[in-house]
Image (tube, rainbow, N blue to C red; front, top):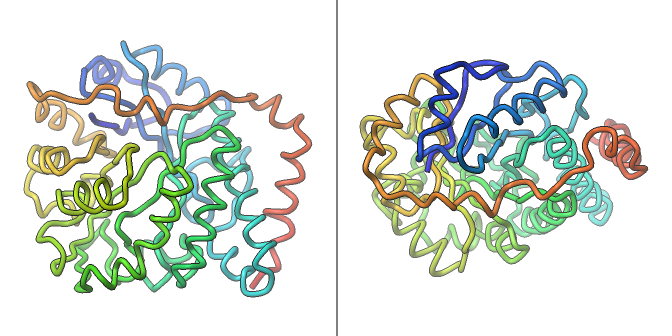
Length: 335
């Protein structure tokens, strides 16, 4: 199955045709697709109306620099602020992180969007792409935050997605632009980067997003292309039974498999349930690439939105204003 990107704030005729394709499981939205809360809700409704099967409408609304919807939404802090607060008051930090999750997810669901790909559970160890998107460098602390964040998302009615498996935080390279190679052996990864993923799976996280990082001491392919990582470690050893997403196949580190067709098939063959095709320029070729392939058309059903108050109901909820105060206003001074 594919989750695709679209070009603007309204569906084009071509994009409506794409949504008719059996392989399309949903649409991922970006800043280019956002004008207002009302427009996002209308676009989400139009996506579902244009397709013959349920569609997953999703976004990256982490907070900090990765927040696609801004005007009319809470100005969410990046996750590193909670790690800094943890050094002063661990209990308060975990409570605020859980509220951050609830606040983020509640706003997204109120907009008619099913899923924000969160939380980032990579370690804060200097990666250019991750940076302040990570909670902390200590895997045990990140594990605590992971449990809290999954609870918060679930309490809002949103599925939680752990990313980027098996850990993107320690290598320097940004996989959007470069290949990334992590030379550490599996026993070190188990003792460090995998700890938060174990915690998230125990907390009943619903999905995992793979990274494009290569771990040559463990498997020859980048993780998203690796049956060893997905089948043996994530599924068999860690017991994960939810949805496995690839990262975007348009990222530079995904090119190692070859062209678009090979990237898609290698992800699916390795065990990914859903492949992200974020660039509209790649969608036509991607749809052609999966013609004739048997696909798990029910893969995304478990991560569709679980109901919402809508914006009027959310704003009227006393918890909403309280969460904004505690998560945004009260954290501005945390250094």
